Image (cartoon, rainbow, N blue to C red; front, side, top):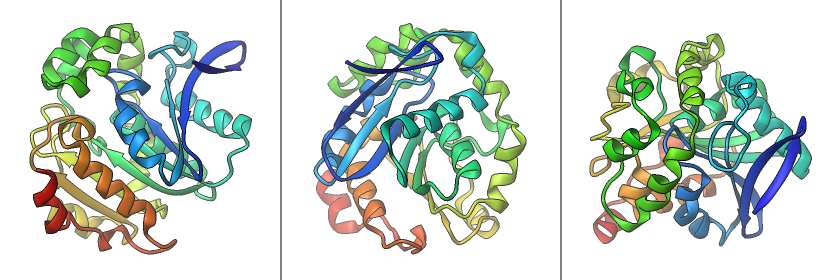
Length: 263
């Protein structure tokens, strides 16, 4: 287990591979551990890190750090401590919010970001998220297959208050401004069957957001596309990371030749 100390509090992370830095940020259910299949796939061409945010996994559970601002600060301090300059980010749920806020504040650092189950609108987030225990959320959202077990096992270790505080941050003014102001290349991925954060209306979304943003919906996924359709997401991530700098993610599609192969 790898850790750093920030203000005398433990922050846990794991790392695989070599190459350009890529950081995975988990959501409201589970911890860094459910990213293992993605880390293994991306470690072939990236140095892949996964963090436990404040209140989750093996990172300290101090309510003073549960705000979205503090979670974003954790990411910034981690990059500084690791000597990481420009970076790609992959965030899921809560991690997607952290990634977005950090990118808004540090566009010169973030090369690109994949945001999975990103909550554009607070009123579209299922109210059960802040009302259920982490264990109940895991039973509700996770499929019954081996790759989901790490998230299921680690879910009860989360501090419910960390979940509740983050939900209150959904109307953070910088997040509300992101749709029009952010210029970091951003790929939004949603599960068609996600009961907690439904996908947006894609056509309407594409008319409103900048050319640097794109939305893709996984028809066979719920809240965890990286587990429900692991191979498909890993291929999409590899394609996204290989886009030349400055090229719009709208060039990406779920290619028919490998959609058929990984179904």
